[in-house]
Image (tube, rainbow, N blue to C red):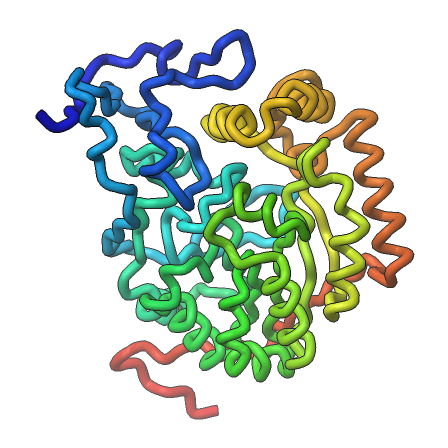
Length: 384
């Protein structure tokens, strides 16, 4: 007999419990290492909105190993709108676009993972293997830009899942969005971990020359081995630095985000990352302290237990010291940088290194006055 899956009601303890705080989740949720090779998360627990939990269990015939490796599955989504609005007072944009749901980069710490629960899927391995592509995004965007009451402000892309994840090579949704924004002179700010962004220099360069585009590369570590386990399918640190160089040489304002900074794991690299980025041509720099909302907490603990068991207690202790003794504090103004002695130390180190390297703290302001509203079908063109 082949290995079977059985349904069972999952209690809160089964779904979210850990063995005395060490970070070991329900054992049946952990997926065999061979099946998840090249992925970030360790487990695939059912989403928190589901009435039932689904787990794979050995049927006693020793056939669990026959399950095939996890493959990336893509579902076409037909959204009704493409621009997402927000009113968060501690971020610099009020609108964004997410070309994809889920992200194959597999960053274990990704704060967007819990959003997959809204789709009835796991924030664990489902988040990086079961992806949604937003079909017709460019047409939707053009329609929304043409709305009578639309007023232009910078659209942020890459704030949730990465617009240049591997799927973009084939689907090219991000490129189609950029083509619309360039056509109508609309400003855009991009955040990515992928060197694929350099593919679109032919669009971004001319936009930047008009003051309409800027890009930030997220660089978590310069250690390729650490990067491979933390963010297994993202571009290597060296390729990201090369993308910074290429964008900068093309005249695109390019920044670096040291994000996330993980206490006792990559915080020692702050100065080196900033120096390498500055040498590559970055003109802006920022950082975000590790965030562990909802299921990300459990996934990160499992990952630590597998890859850095000796550091697990120390890392989690430092994380809690930056969040008022909790795993996470979502308070606006605190969630990005934390508080407390260690958080203050990280902030001061970052500020000193950035100032020494010539990052002056100024941010490129993009223009909105060049925007031209798309003409709707059947609408008469303006005379003047």
